[in-house]
Image (cartoon, rainbow, N blue to C red):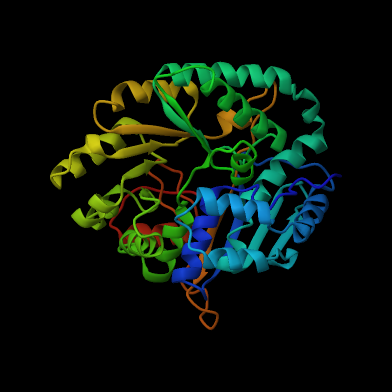
Length: 405
């Protein structure tokens, strides 16, 4: 089959920014990731073999001068030394183990240097999603002309409703062409006339370069979760915020707070951090409830929440974004990151429900993976990690409830 990922920057921006912060703060850390298919999909025979070949093909993908020039122009907060690292970066298929069990379920493990393996997650997920539709023949249902029109109508509703939003859909897209179609339609619609809302850009660096847009993103849960595995969850948010500001000097100031629940984050979110970071991202839980917590926290610190950005990104579609916009605009500066609803919304095609999560970390090569780590979601029952690790972290934080692997 054809090679699916052929551009080094066909990836989410936050993988690059986190990679930079990892090298700056934890250069010797090593990690383990694992793959989860939340739908328990039975993959076609031979899928793991072809996936392994696609991952090995990543070894031929290197950063180009054009890509670096674009990032240096658009991502001025990334320090210059990081591009020297990218020049020498090479993928290695030996970091990844892929297999299928007797029932056809897919199993993937990743292990290696954190700075190296951090650039695999989004690419592998995008490969799995596109490859699955190729194997099953569902890709024949992809009518990209109709998809352009469908996306354009979504853009009209969001822009007309005053939403400030971006594309976050790389990891579970139907194909690169699908995401390309989305970004093109969104840009065309945004430029067609003056709108109350604004299309900010895309998390995909390659497509941002292709359409001369702003690459959008800051960090993912793995940055905080890894720190929680190294130092414990109680101070993980504090350490993460401190490392982030040291690397980016106040830029990229939107913090993803829900790795270990609101309560411990709120204790770590002191007035200096609240003033430094321009806003927070809501990625789990009830949106109204989370917004109210954020508003109350800012007010308790003497900060007007209407001066702060709140990015909503929890499984959004157009209807939910417009609903949130209506009530959030009176409390903050709302914006939206919309993923699968943009890039995998073909009629008759079910989006995949797949993730790759970091589940173990050690601060240096000589240590053992003694503690593992997890993510404690604000969505009840959707904690990610080994059940015994989830329980241990919840006990450390005096939390109640149960999680699932």
